[in-house]
Image 1: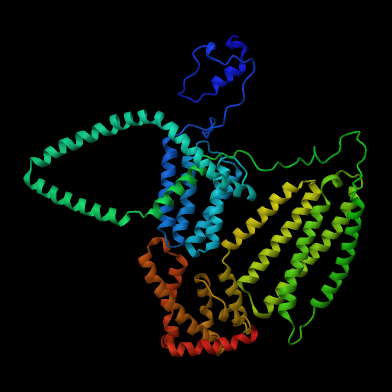
Image 2 (image 1 turned 120 degrees about the vertical axis):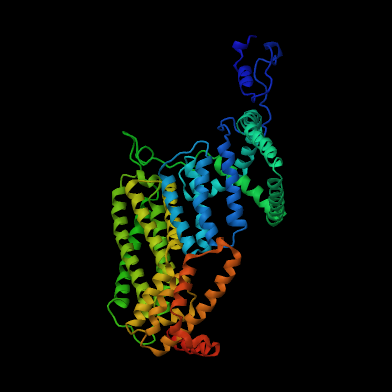
Length: 563
């Protein structure tokens, strides 16, 4: 049998890894007319992987050094800010086949904004968002769309991708080695050797220069020894280096090349073929009856909602928490359930039913009622805010409610455009991720206490309870300074005592961060410290701790009546 008539044998020969021997003649091939059982798979690097370049290895090393300095040895959010700025640059520098699509630029901008907020006034929510964005950035750089679920899968694939990448690096070492040796020997090694040889001769020829050189060399060796002892890594840090190396290789050289799910086309898969018999979905009637039922129920409830909570004065002892806090949460759940129901109805064979336009008209009526319900939820939130001011959790509630409304609008768009469930779920996760990111970036305390301070200065002391019972970040504490001149004596003295206490805390924090280093630096903390120092004469009487504690206790008791 000739080699020309045995494609299976020829395929086996072509699949041999580089550097291995191939059969010398057709006589050495198996005599069987058919290909034998497939060879046992081996853990080898993918033959489609791009070649290794030194810039890629340098990028991995830089990522390890960056992670060690900013995360392992870092002690604060400034280190993370630098990591979120530099890590994407190193990924771009080392990517074998970078792809600069829309997701790449969008995630790059989001990381820059997040790094700025982390340097100003960071939080662990920001750190979590930043790490997720770095993984999404690497995913976009490889040409994949950074859907939220796929970002999680892409992060997990670094375990396998790092293993494959290390194997590929090892196999590429033989090819890189000779070229690197020649480059170092001819371009760097020889000039360096000549410099050292002639330099030593010139030094030895001058006794004074030789003595000075000896002292300098001794100082350098001593300093080098101390520096090595200072930075000598522990075994935990070495393990951290290995883990970061593994993950970095997996991010630079991923093995994930396609999305988990394919989105169905709204034209080819959801429209019946020409000449086909009309489709009559089995669940059309139950779905229609369900929509008619909820339309009637929502109409009755909306009349009740507007009658009981709109355009009225609330009496003394009104249950604000039950109606405006817990009630708003339950109505938000109702909106979320409506989103699920609409998504469940408009899918599968229902979209091919000839009676679909009638079902859509019912859906538009219910959608309008859901919009009115969303307005009612926002109104309940404003009632609660109007009662005793803004808080962080009420900001969370507004963000969550807005996210639910966005999800509902995405369902409406899905119905209009005949999109499938995969499309909807990906957009829902994007909406949720964007809401979390924006909340992490949002200057919550600054906005919250700007509103509360304005209310108090206008003569409504109720929001003072939010200043009394809730922690305030450095970006919010400066907004309290106008209350130092408040007409309400209890609020005025309470805030003065609070700012005196906050100044002591800021001084202590500044001293601690001097020892922690630059990674713990926060711009907002520094700005707050300098401003509080400049205004400290306005609460000088509260340097006495006993007097301060008495004023704070009186303020807490006074504000608690609006809790």
